[in-house]
Image 1 (cartoon, helix red, strand yellow):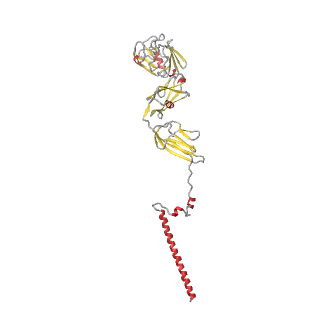
Image 2 (cartoon, rainbow, N blue to C red; image 1 turned 45 degrees about the vertical axis):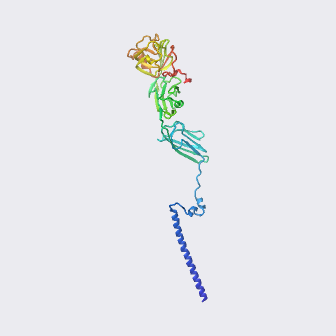
Image 3 (cartoon, helix red, strand yellow; image 1 turned 90 degrees about the horizontal axis):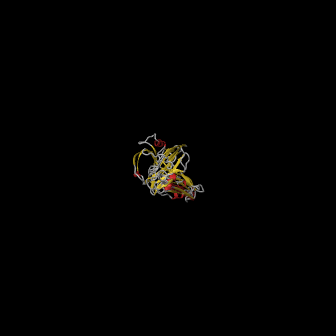
Amino acid sequence: MKPVQAADAAIVMTQGAAERRARRTRLAGVALAMGGVLLVTAGCSSSGSKSSTDAKGPGGDGTASAAASPSAPKNSAAVLTVLPKDGAEDVNPNDALNVAVTGGTLTAVEVTDKNGKPVAGVLAADNLSWKPSAPLTVGMVYKVSAQAKDADGLVAASTSSFTTLTPAKTASANDNITDNGTYGVGMIVSVNFGKPIKNKDAVLKGITFEDSNHTVVKGHWFGSQRLDFRPESYWKSGTKVTIHYRLKNVEVSPGVYGDVDRDEPFTIGRSQVSVADAATHQMTVTRDGAVKTIPITAGDDQNPSWNGTMVISSKEKVTRMNSATVSNIQGSEYDISDVPHAMRLTASGTYVHGNYWGSSFGKANASHGCVSMADTKGGDDASTAGKYFADSLVGDVVKIQNSKGKTVSADNGLSGWTLPWSAW
């Protein structure tokens, strides 16, 4: 019986162990199922919290996770500085824009206006800075994109934008040139400004001349509102000239900007230079090498003509001349309402003109300072004065010599040729 009992006990023990193993298996399955629900719940939690398993990664201690993630990118040692700062407004269009780098070199700078038009610039020889080569446009939005790299080739980049100021005050600029006009070889371009100019050098840089003979043209200031331009010697016949005005972006005085960006073309015609000799009462006219002499009368001893080189600044078929408009007239006053074929030489009232009331041509000086020649009342185009008038251009040279008068001032009309080039 005992062996049987022992066997029965062994069987009972074996069945109990099996039941315990089965129970553990069922519990383990429940636990795994519950664990899967937790993981899913944690992954979709609105709180954003993570389970400890997520935090540590597959290894359970974070080691495997750290090994699997990419390393942080290395920043370039190049540091870009762009002025004006991003979003800046009312920026001065002159010398305000500058791109620079430390710890590297510039590799690209692109500046465009709101229309996509590129801005030309100059990169420093050491590749550490960039500036625009000309003033920016007022009232314009600009975008700046810059790149640089350090010694390791790592790139730094910057993108920004700014807006230039819109001037509250402007100074008008008007000259004596008509587009596509033709002028004499002595033509002086005279620019008059509506307000006093303080930044004269900046204005000079904003007005440039381009011509077919590569003539050097310089400007000379007469006061703060007049700027005249001429070459060292008379222009060559046939020269094609274009004046480039770029003043809208120039601060001509504190808070005041120019008002014009335009190009003005003109042409120098044939050469005509007249020399009026007050001592001989004759005027020699040299036109493209051909010479002729015209009898004249110049200013008398009480009202001598100016000496010096003058330029015809305007032509009037008939004009009124009144001594009340001319300073320092000595002797009898005059008021002639119909002076024919008049060509102005000075602002003070000197003309070359026709004369129908006198008879001293070639004999004596009888005028109040003008140079006159024979004409008829109403003006006859076939007269001496009429022919000279027809042959003359604004810009033609008229030089008066051997008068008892003083030398004309350089700013009296277009008389700048009286100044030597070294003083211009």
